[in-house]
Image 1 (cartoon, each protein chain N blue to C red):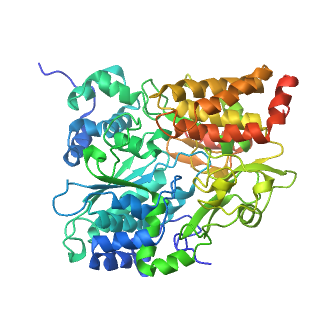
Image 2: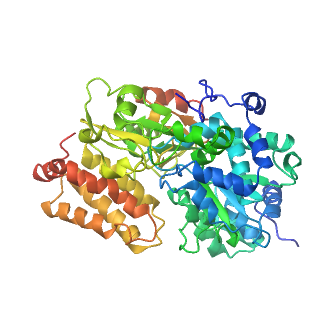
Image 3: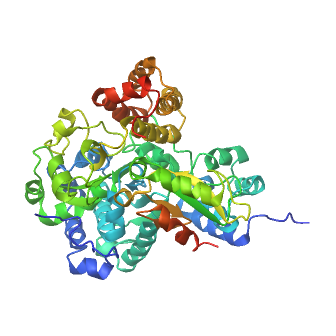
Length: 159
Length: 424
């Protein structure tokens, strides 16, 4: 009996397409981890092992890369990830009030997910929008010139 | 005043299409370049005195000249645009990539031609989703128009180009770490030598240039070296510079100004001065890893020679302003927490020293500081000085701290004596 794959076929097809412009399969591993995340939200141990085999790497090699980068999730995340910029310009412009409000509103701390699986709250370094500080990014949407008053309305967009 | 890099960028934030770019002269520099020899292009860039806009300010033409050229050299050669832009307080390359991606692509094609690279990468940071979509689209447009691919515009020159979006680490901005990331490895810095120009991406000759640097190239080729030198106010380098300001100024933003514009002009004229109720206390002139400048330094020319004379660096040219209601100790803590988190962990002084530094600063902020902590912090600034670490991350992290200890020492002492942050 063929072993059942736990990473989706679409994901594998996307990864395979990248092989042609690199000298070895492992060179695509960062992109490949991103693809797995796109389809499965986060990278579980099982998916990591399966992907490593596909890329001709050891699971440890791949894990050393997966755990190095900020945006590869090795633990489950909710349907939406909120990244609050905590770098210097946002800090000067009132990051703490935004951060405190989000923690209170969602009743979670950084690194945690709401019980309904809706939001994961994470800190992030500078988002490169310092002229509109404070900022945060939800999934792929950047929010600038934040005030505490704006947050409830913004969160409504994410179910 | 000439603003070659930003003059066509639209105010509403929408992208300049290929058609619009061509209408204002886009890709005419490429056509001109392909009629010259690669050596002639390199000579022009050398003579233009363009210096790298990513922070280190290395002369671009000289950097290129280290790439082996001629018939029997190693192939393929690579050219990489560094758009990692994760230096806190820096947001200049975003504007260039989002506003006019074809300007970057044209600059990359001409630069690739000069070093005879056949593969190019645009390396963008994770957070720049809009920029990534626009580059992807612009690359397709460029391929369809014959600016990329085989036999570009009938010249016989081939170049393919790809987009890589990072998965987030400050280290990726360091050029050798960036190459490791592109190879699918941890973004640890590499030993130099060998320099990337000789042994870079996958062991092949590679040039890594900052986005803003590459955006200068079409204009140098189109308008010539004399024009390029004359639009700068700085004797040490040509061209304009993208300057920015963030913090409690009236109109934070990005402005393209002659290289060598004074800090005062940037802050008082373009950023509109301080917000009502706030006074200027100091500024990091070029991102998080540059030394503080104070009111005494406002007339410094923001270029590669004058800022170091004032005790700091031009860095990325994006100024972070500290006002009189912002705590210098707290600001250092925010900075050092960032650097401690982003250390790649490869060398000991950085991996151990930065979290230690952040811990001491946190203790001061929480009212648990002791007088000897100031000596410990001073010790760290020597311990992580240039030459003691593998790359420039930790020495850069020490720049704001060492200058804060010099200019705002009374604030550090007050935190300790009063057992609290005196700004809360």
